[in-house]
Length: 330
Ligand code: UDP
Ligand code: MG
Image (cartoon, rainbow, N blue to C red; front, side):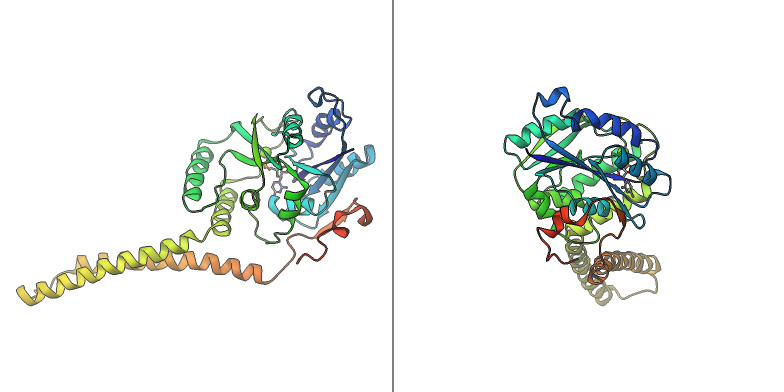
């Protein structure tokens, strides 16, 4: 029987977890009507990303109630992307489905994803038809962001597609092999390639609690996305520098000729100050961009592990890490 793993990152979700358990049971018992009688072996890997509420106690309770619910507790909040990697390292299924703990990703869509997987697709992503309850700021920001990101790279990152997806074992292993600490998983799915298809879903509202993605965190993730996915901003800085230098040389020639022909009365403060400000601004911008990338090189060069586990219910001998990819750099 094929095995399917569910990977769910959990950060301060104590109020959502009971509802999540109830919602998943029909699937795990293979009694969900949309499975149409298909039978799979299931496991649920819940990664506690350093919650500071009672989420972890809840995870332990779930594990006691049903041992298909396994938990991994990270030593602090490493962020969703790294929590996902902890899960990637532990799932043992032939396929894996990633979903949020807040039930914004409907369980009803999962059988549809499995059908596509059985048809031979290796990466079945959920495509949001609507974005649920979200601020106008976030909607506009997301739209502009993706159009900019996709203009700057060869491998497109799909808009309206998030972490809700089914991955075949091949894709799981490919993504596990990418050990960067500053992760932008959404870009990695696209970068590794494989046969992809989408299924539509309506984003539900959160069952409880509120989103952890504050505008600040979103902007950070967006910058992370750009700088870890493309070096186009560096190219932009070069092009900008080149264009400004050409303009500056033309202007210089103009000034020299003008002075030679008409002489130069002492004036020109506004021109001078504008030029200094524009050039200064461009230089700072370029330095900032270069700094972003140097910062990334610095962090990656320390080769720190992307996450640290404090406690887990997954016993090492059933752990996929021991059988495959054991020589991965960590
Ligand atoms: N999450 C996490 N670590 C974090 C932030 C979020 O593991 O630092 C989890 C969270 O528990 C949820 C999922 O990531 O299961 C999505 O988070 P959230 O619902 O806050 O984001 P949104 O749906 O608003 O994008
Ligand atoms: Mg959510």
